[in-house]
Image 1 (cartoon, helix red, strand yellow):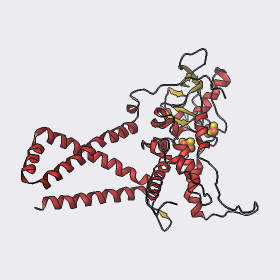
Image 2: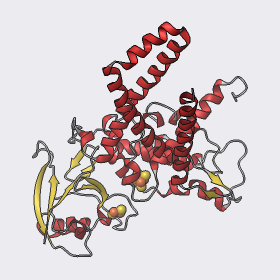
Image 3: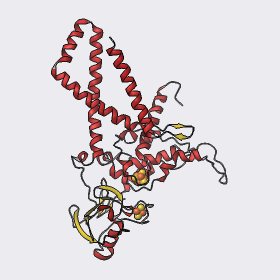
Image 4: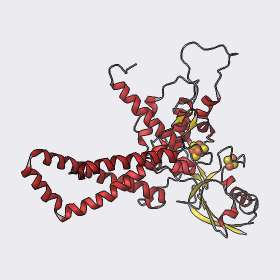
Length: 130
Length: 241
Ligand code: SF4
Ligand code: FES
């Protein structure tokens, strides 16, 4: 079969700015970099805490420096955005049926958010207790 | 009257699409497709576009209307106030002429997912029925409502950037058979690939664009879960079949 002569439009480099949904998607993808940073930071913290007082004091000095505080504030906002948008999408991957009744998406998303809050509260309690 | 700004591309004459303005009567019962038919019948017989049923069934009249992928037979002129209304071919596809796009690639992808009931073992005689309960029908019915209008492909930035991506309607079509109680096929090798469900980054615009509420984004995410569970099961020594 010979291909028909046709005009092939090129994708505009700013295609993601054309629609709100594309922009939210690109932001969700980009914020995953901060999620990765948060995970790495947690590993560094745990390693320092296990390694002894000297290492832990060194880590605290590093964590208290202005640029790390600034980075972590941005990372907190980005991670929260990533988590909220991710959990809002979860009902689309899960079809939950209870006795033939399909559980509506907002209940699944609400359940995810509640579980997230409960786990966060538990972690905060364990960390702040001492 | 309302102005339709229609994208024209005449191979051999235009190096790239150009816009041409036409004034058409603004009638409350006219869809954009009626405006295009008026142009073709009364103003400019050289304008090319596809249509057939005029009732949202055949899926052939998809175009980009004011930047959105729409079925032009179900999109009314009065929805756009005073106008003008910009009518372009579906984005993401090569343009053959004016508003007609080349959809061969998607047609091949639809066929690629084995969209038929696959049976294994002994067949029942032709006179036998394969009965289904209403719940079994409900499991896949939504995915069987697709009219192959390609609006979901036009809305998908992944398809525009990665033409090898199997795409929303083809994966929804595969799920239409995967979830059918009569089907015994295995489409794992077709779907659990980088060009298949893992190519999807979940922008979700395919579902917003779909005029038939097929929800292809849901079909893809559900198969991601199935594919992930199947992959884990295949890794377990006792899980392999
Ligand atoms: S899934 Fe919806 S938008 Fe995509 S081809 Fe089918 S009917 Fe059209
Ligand atoms: S003409 Fe058939 S869907 Fe619009």
